[in-house]
Each structure stands twice: as structure tokens, then as C-alpha cells.
Amino acid sequence: MADQIADALEHKACSTMAGPSIITSTQPRYANYPDIVKKCDIDINTTTDGVILPVCVPKRVPTLVLTNYTQSSYASYLNNSRYSGVGIGKENDWVVLVLASNTPAGTFANVAAPRLGLVARMSLSMVVLTLVWLGIW
Image (cartoon, rainbow, N blue to C red; front, top):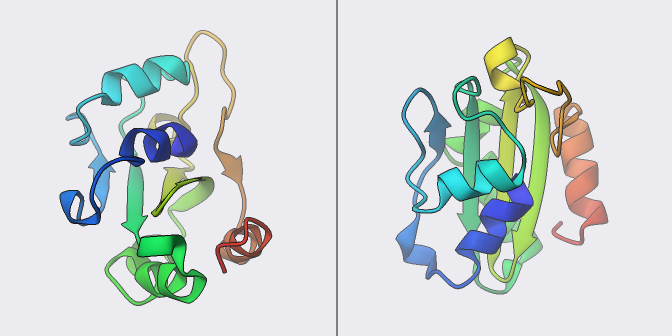
């Protein structure tokens, strides 16, 4: 899902998105969010507990990307033990983290075929290692 959201943001200016998108019973503010969840085979009616953290940094300078996640309001989400899974996507200047909770409504699973999908369970330290692996940090 994170990769699909990053794809959707690919040609948007950095100033078009600011702050996290909390996934609740209302849809996040992405115009094509229903298409994204459909493409990812996620049941939009039962996935209501997660957060989408987009960051836009020109040329995706690794230290600035990391700072955007760790020295902002995003840090409270990354340090919250409620979130137990993460998906990471990147396109051009955008990096997107999708955090999943350990609740049934936060797994991003399809009700018909329960699975975690593109969200892998990992700790914050694994997120940092993944950012390093992706060349973001």
C-alpha cells in the first residue's frame, strides 16, 4: 500500500501534502485512495486503524528524510507500541510509511483472505535498517 501511495504522489509538489493521514472510518485525503486499497486488495470497510506518513524531500536526501520522521510529529507514531507493522514506499522525492496496528482493524488484511499484504511486521529498528537498505538513510 505504501508503494501505491508513493506512486500516486510521485508527480505532486512537496507542498501538496503535509502531516499524517490517520486511517479511520473516514478515508484519507488522497483522491484515489479507494483505487489504491482496491488494487492492494484491502477491505476498506474493515481497515480503520492505521496511519499513513508521507514525507517529501527534494532529491530524497537521506538525513533530511530521517529527520522528517524522527524530529516531527511523526516520531510519536513511530515510537507508539500500538503500531506493529510498517510498509515503505518511495517515488522521486516522496517516501511513504504506512503503519499498521495489532488490532483486527489495523492489519490491512482482506477479510475474504486474511493476510498482512504489503505491511510487514517489524520493529522501529527494522524500519531504520530498511531505510538504510533502500538507500534513504
